[in-house]
Amino acid sequence: MHKSKNSLHSSIFLILYIALCVQVSFAQELKKSTKTERIDGKSFYIHTVEKGQTLYSICKVYEISQNDLVFENPELINGLKPNQILKIPVKTKDAKENPAVINENNLLNANYHTVEKGETFYSISKKYNLSVDTLQKNNASFNGVIKKGDKIILSKANFDKVTPPTPLPLAETEKKITGNEIYNVGLFLPLYLAKNDSAFTYENKDEQKTIYPKSIPAVEFYQGFSLAIDSLKKLGVNCNILVYDIPSDSLQIVNFLKKPELKELNLIIGPFHSDDVGVVADFCKRNKIMMIAPFSQASKALLGNSYLCKATPSSSTQVEQLANYISINNKGSNILVAHNNLSKEKTSAEIFKNKANKILGTDSVTVIVYKSIGLKGLTGKLSTTKNNIIFVPSNDQAFVTDFLNKMNTLTKDYKIIIVGMESWIGYENLEINTIQNTQLHIPSNNYVDYANPETKKFIQRFRETYKTEPNKFAYEGYDIAMYHLLTLKNYGITFMEKTTEFKSNGINTQFNYFKTGTESGYENQKVFILKYQDFSLIPAN
Image (cartoon, rainbow, N blue to C red; front, side, top):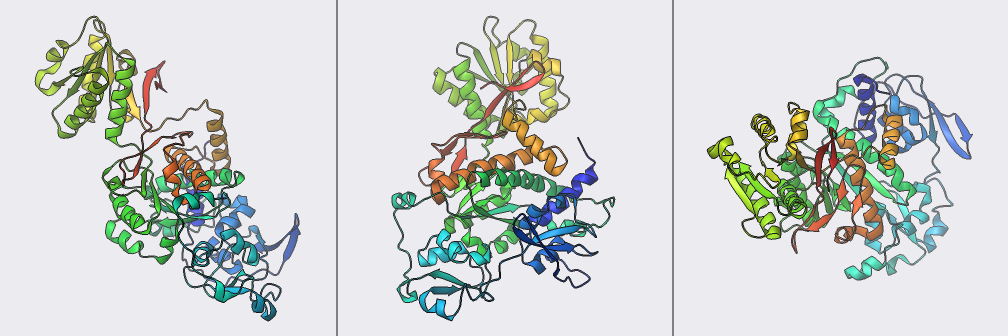
């Protein structure tokens, strides 16, 4: 079932192509084929790929999107090769060539608009207080794609009578949502296209390529996201997905955000890195665009910004949810917190203690500085009759390994349950018997249930489409698209106000949003509490 890294890289290169219209040069002039065929009631150009041609150059000549080209030619997932035969949909003649769409007689009775640079059907619909559906029906010949200079029909009404829309109260806006609206969704991914530029065109299927490592998570996220889009289309979700290669530093991002078309977006998903989230979040606040931060754990940007939504719980939220679970399910136990007096550890210890004491009562948790009292001092705090639950808020792998080994020696005489941090999941040097004996519990933002039928379907689709196995970024891309785009369809651009009522179980991530303040953003508070049982990690909550 698995293929080589070279095969995966080939798939990745194509996906990067699909994601963005990359400006590349080609050695020869590409001419539109004159050969056409009618297949399943539709007309197609039959194009034979020649050496040096790229997806970008082919799409440019035939005036088709790369997504549409790949949809009609799914074998492109294995790469673009010389002598490959492509079928390309024949577009209906555009408005300038088709007098049945716009001619002098029509223009006498129909008001129209000349498209300016950066305008979309959505922005024009807002300008004239029309629905996107009406505009697209009146201009079906454009196949949903317009460019500067195109003349589009607005309606049969007199042009002079068209007035700008009057803003509606939120309640009225919600009533007008039909579920058929088309939304513009920006996907901000760190694709590092400049680093991968030399790898975009390959002509020999055996030719080895090396993709820039930092771009792989973004590509895998996009793979999962794309599979979700296919599923969402069947549910009636209709979005224009615009993928952007987000720059790698804050100064470049500031300049990137000056693109005028970005203000036409209804939703932005990304960027990945916490350092970039604040800059984009400020842009979204100024332009009233909802933003989903997929991986950032920092909560600072949420303050005073009701347009920001953090899909990943912060470490503080993890600790609080951990304390909540331990307190509710282990009443009457001896609860200890052992830290080494480091700043972050003390903060986590304080959060855990305050939450547990709020549920169990004052002084229900004993906090110790292990660095000072050592194993002997800790042993003196243990109960011989109760369960001893010890929370260790450390991310120091060497310390954690040593601590667990010492706790393992005490399990013969004491009932011990160790509670750790999410980072421990990646510690490969922890002995499985030690983990089992100490009944280790760990908080996590993600958990894949491989027995779930939906998970099995996703994995099968992923294997068939990309010839490899999905990883955490692919799962995350799928879940984020499925949840947020479906709520966008159901509730419109104010959908985040409804997410506190609408909980969802994804195949890797569950969503349970909480508004952090009256004028602040939203944070996903769903945390899995995982425990080791029968040599496997399973949810305890």
